[in-house]
Image (tube, rainbow, N blue to C red; front, side, top):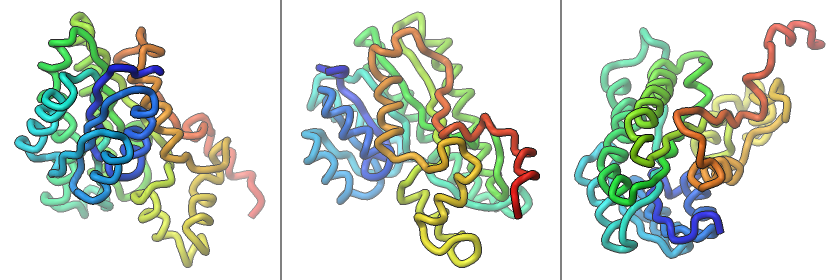
Length: 263
């Protein structure tokens, strides 16, 4: 098993990519601590994986310290951090108020930073470790009316590189995963906006937003979990400071070609 005797914290671990990652890590031999805001789904994942659940807000310093303490007390240390918790508010720059901007950065960027900062002493004590930061293709390209979300996801790439440079000499690797569209609760909420105009159902909406993607579909959370497993495991032992784009080929497409599509 690829994570035998490893201990991992997965933020946003109650649903979606986080929950799928916790389940896969457990199957690969890891002990897992899952964190997030909603106790019920967290506890369900913890019970399923034989792990521990620590409910709280990712932006809360005390909550993050508790999660790291639980990993140490229950499982003896920490080897892997998957900073996955995130949220998104819509709005172009002129429309995003300070509250939504601040909340987006508090969770997506500051929450990830504080979790990693709290975990670093334990990782450094082991003399090894892997940090996986779940960003988004929105770190590289922009859709409409997503100023806060896209800026926050881009900021995570700078954090990833900084961690890789500063802590690589001490055995810590840091990489970012950049998913495209993934079938999750968060993705479903975005698809609901298309129903009635461009799509007739959530499933149809996913088809609409991925119609120019070479693989012609959205990813599953389990596929993103497999990417996290690669970055967390020894299979990527010489990979650090980089990004893994997992978007079905979307960023490879020259969108000017769509001008020749039949109408």
